Length: 135
Image (tube, rainbow, N blue to C red; front, top):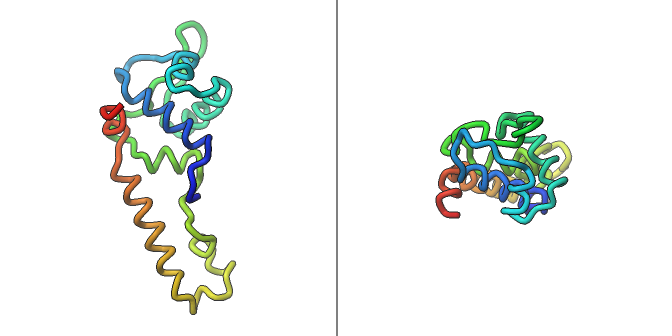
């Protein structure tokens, strides 16, 4: 992943919104969707995915909705992005060098590795708390 998809963008918008709310506040999906301008059905799928890995907690029934799964200073942008987009891959040779018959002799392979490390580092350094404060 080098370019964020719409799903990734929606995921970030939704979870940053939750990060700006009190940790014990359950937010209705419809309210979140309106606030961040994301189709509710799309957001529901994203948040269900997040709830499986503990980024958000989901509550069913009356008074149901979502809240952040952990405190916002303990969730990085990297976790959110990789949860929806998968690993950050600037070039396929970074994932499986065997896919490329040049990886042993390629001078660019180390550059792709560095790009991957730098991008992951930048995203890992940003927490949801920082992003929610900036909202």
